[in-house]
Structure formats: C-alpha cells, structure tokens
Image (cartoon, rainbow, N blue to C red):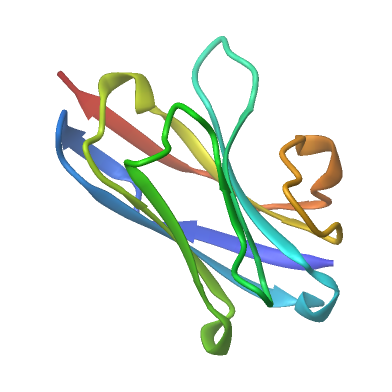
Length: 124
C-alpha cells in the first residue's frame, strides 16, 4: 500500500496559480504511475493529469492542457501539479493517486491508492 498526502490547495482568483504537492510513502517501488484527479460538487471524479515515475512521460486532460504541468521529484517521492491561468471551473477537490499500471492510464479504477484530497477554489 502507498500512503499519499496532498497539500497546496486554497482560494485563488481567476487567472492565478497554485502548486499542489503529493508526498508518497510506503510501497512506492510498486508504483509506476502517479495521477491527479478532481471532483467538483455533484460531478464524477475526473482525470486531470498523470506522470510515469521512471520515464517522466505525462498525460493531460484536454481541459487543463497548456495550463497545468505535472512533475515529480523521485528523491523526495513527491509529485507536483503546477496550475496556472486558473478558471472558476477548475474549482474542485483535487486528489493524488498511485497506480501499478504503466501508461496513459486515465480511469480512476486503475489507481489503487488515494490521498485525502485538497480543496482548490477559484473565484471569478
């Protein structure tokens, strides 16, 4: 099992930036892909971005491509999500997740471990 702790959420005005962090511990050697998802009130959890631990290959949802950047620091077992040009529709709880699958895995079903989530609120 992998333990994940997110941080960095908060309240920001439209057009602003936030950087989310996700610190991983536990059986991280069995983790191949780290992902970020988000869930707004009344909506399903949706894929935002993911990154391969070893090669750094990344995938983004169309709604965030060009505005968000995912990165990782293997030495710190930490994944980041830099969010720029934020919009009110980006408001959601953001979750970090770990998967033993490799590739552009975008379904929540293939992520076995999840963090507790961090709230991001973008005001207009």
